[in-house]
Length: 184
Image (cartoon, rainbow, N blue to C red; front, side):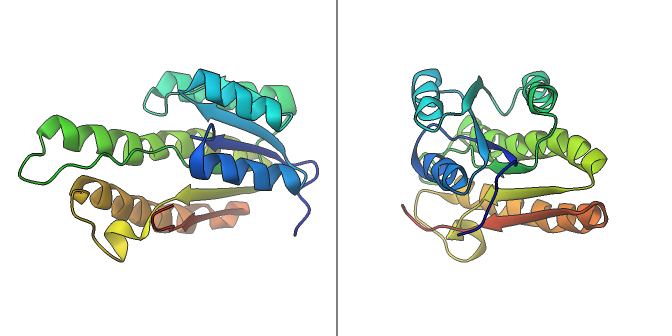
């Protein structure tokens, strides 16, 4: 594997699923892992398992996002790695989809990633170093899936955002990439 000793990593949506798996891999590589999630019970359990910290984090609450990122930087002196993994994937056909269904997925999956990445970039830019990885999906950019039009659109939007952000921040020693898992 690789050595992340001394690095500080925030995993949004890290309480369970893919996020928990990412957090475990980061811990195994030596990073200090911080779980940011709206599921307080599972988030605290995961953080305890990994000898990490937990912050309640609703990624669509800008003030809360800024507070959590600032708190991590103050406590640890840096934030080297962000895994922007928080997201939802409710299934509903286009015909039955409401405007609220659409907005909720876009807000959490796209706006939430934007807010967390934006807050993190300010600190990484000062450090002249950082690694950001979004959890996107093959749905949207590569394939479709019935009932996930809103989800596919949100994941394709993440990739467009990621490509431009990577170009803007490369000169500061910051890389921004995405993983694109299928159904897990």
